Length: 320
Ligand code: SF4
Image (cartoon, rainbow, N blue to C red; front, side, top):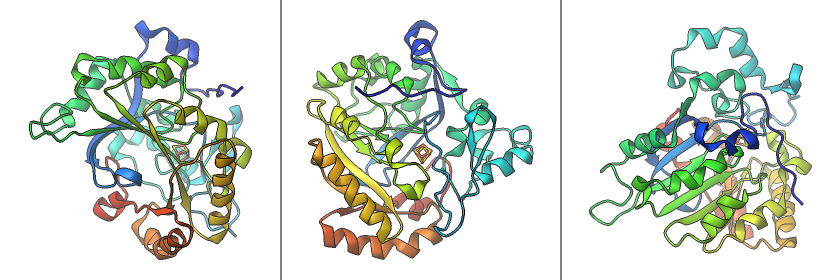
């Protein structure tokens, strides 16, 4: 039995999402780019970044000998120090729109998609509006182009498999989504699929689903017990016709050893899949520091190296 996640302020409860008639999807941004990571690197894709995450990943970007500067505040909220500084500076009142928010260099790089204080920078839209927005980003206003090539849809976040997942059957079944062929869920792999979504994807002959599973290692600041959930990956992998891979963010040998232990934990429950490793670092200068070592380890272990192509192409910016 896998426990349902606890939802924090600003996120919907399962009950709220069940009241579909009044339910809207909150998302921080949608954009058209090339997939920068994992199996589909280079594939033209529309990204839908939903709001909310059950994690904070506050230690990303902090040196390992540097004590975590994360702080815990009332209501159990945990804040990265850079986020606290931004809030203290009055960033909410000073900033007009999501894309004007500053990029930060420690913790979760999509902080404005996860902290409730930033939820009003995120859109709240009916599925019809979301579909129109997504299609407006594609080159021809549709998923399958006249030349036969298809545009992928990437469900990302935040964590896209929080309670929002109960709206996804409606999204994928929308009349204007009928030519959509490929969907990837970029997930931290802690949220079990709701039965409706599981059954829908399991029986869909039209949509090929890829689970890009990125469990968080201790370099993120999240604990093994919270982050490594092999039964959840097993749940995804049993969706008929779907494809699953594991993707780890690593900075050094200790992370690689931990990734190896995690891979074994997934194998122990029957999840046999390709393993990708990606260098830590949202900033291009950090990324270059450890890229070669990660590539060499991948060659040694038979794992697959994934770059962060979008960082090389566009730097660390919203909408990429
Ligand atoms: S799991 Fe992903 S979206 Fe959630 S806090 Fe960590 S990096 Fe951010």
